[in-house]
Structures are given as structure tokens and as C-alpha cells.
Length: 356
Image 1 (cartoon, rainbow, N blue to C red):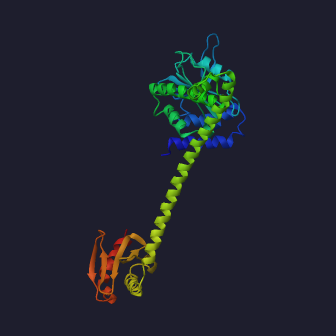
Image 2: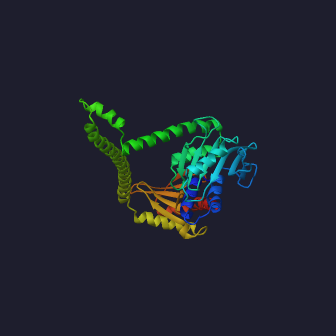
């Protein structure tokens, strides 16, 4: 099953790719808005879930229509007003949506051009849409935390109280972030005074205030740059450490491989085993891998299909043959020619692996 996050990011990539070609409101709805509604889990072809051109009578104005209404239990829960892709979402667009809002039972509304999405509710005054959206994102540059918030509007997770609680938090965090951004970019006198009073112990004149305004702005910019640099350095150090770990592991493997010496006796034993097994399988299906403590004979070069292991030293020679339970039984060898004595056992192992 495709993850919701992946679906939304894929839609964002599609919108970014096609936005220059989508030039009308109807094209925007078809190419961008309807797929968006679908990714929220609603059946765009089911009028019990999604109603296009939803009628919302406004006072004396009868037959006023909203582009889409998403329904639950035959009541609208989310209104969507669409504009042409690329067009600005201005005050006039917002006021039109605000008029629609209080005439229905829907508590959430979206204003969108298929690229930017603005979410509204009535946090300030009940049954009256807030003038500012509580949640805004650009789908072509949507962040993971924004997708997590958007997921609350998915049909499977839609819960009025949960969304309203999140909306409160989003509204204030958004406004605080905007306020912080404004103060950092263009510090207000009160903002500057807050810091100056803590480090400057003489009267704060207008001249002093002007002097410190630039210093406060510069200090914040340097502090933010330091934070970014530190995070980049942490990420770089982590990547370097991982690369060093990989290099060390590779070095250890290389050193281990250097210690492994395949003897002529091991190769001769391998050829004997292949000669035994060629009556059942093709020669290329019997492979070998050398290790420090043994010499393994494998089926299809798969270390999970070990046929046998050879333990050949100057003082002792053994063959360890595996059974269907992957259990190894060792047998003594006077010399490698004795391997022929165990032909039936070797053939039995190969026949088991070959049958899967």
C-alpha cells in the first residue's frame, strides 16, 4: 500500500511539472484539485462524498455555488473554493469563501489554486470564518510536518475535535513564526529595547536605539547561520563516521581474505565432489567458497545451501555433510579419495536442494 506521504509528494511533483500548462480554472480542477481530494481518501465520483458545484444560498442571493463540498452523513464537512493555477489567492477570493462558510454546517474551508492551499475555520468568532487561514502550504514544496497535519483531513482520520485542536495550535505557531521572522528581518524598537536593556546600563536614546537595531539584526543573522552551520557539521561528521566504519569493515574483510589460502588439496577435493554430483546436476551449480577454518562446497553458490565443508589440515582431514535440517555431520578421511565413500550422502543433499 502506498504511503499517504508518498502520494502527496508524488502529486506535488506532478503539479510542479504541469503547472505551466494548466491555464484555466476547469483544467486546474481536473488536473490538480480532484486528484488532491482523491488522495484525501474521498471518492470524487460519489455524490454522497464529493459534490461539485455545491449550492450555498446567501441571504437574498439564491443558487450561489461552491466548487466542491465534501460530505459526511449527508452534511458538508469541508468546502473547497478553486481558482486558476498560478493566480494569486487574494482578499476578494477569501471574502467570497467567507460568505459561503456561515451558510453551511461545514466548519472547515479550503481556498486553493491547485498549488497553494489555505485552510480556514472559526477560531476567533464562532460561526464566522477567520480572516486568516490557520494552515497554509505549497504542495510543490510541502514539508513532512505539513503532510502530517494534512493527514488529519483524510477520510480515514477525520475527527472534528482533533482538527480543531490542531487548528488552534497551527494558527498561533504560524503567527508567532511570522512575527519572529519579521522581527529578525526588521527589528521593532520594543524588540531591540528588550535586549539592549539587559546589556546597556545607561539611558537608551534614539541614537543608541538606532545603533543597536543593526547590531540586534546582525546578531540574530549570525546566530541563525551558526545553528545551520552546526547542524551541517553534525550531519557531515555523522556521514564521515559512517564512511570510516564502512572503510574499517572493508579493511577487516580484506585482511581476513588475505589470510585465507586455498590449497591444491582443497581444489582437488572440490573436483572430486563435482565429479560425484555431475550425475544429478550441472557442474556449474556446484561452487566453492574458502574460509579460514574450512572449505565450503555450495549448491548454486548459495551459502544457505551448503552441501558439505572440508576440514583439511596436515594432521587431520574431515568432511562435514549437511542434511535436510541443515545439520552438519562430520566424517574422518584418511585422504581426499575417501570422499567417494560418501557419494550417496552428497547426492542426497543435492537432490534435496534441487527439489527446493
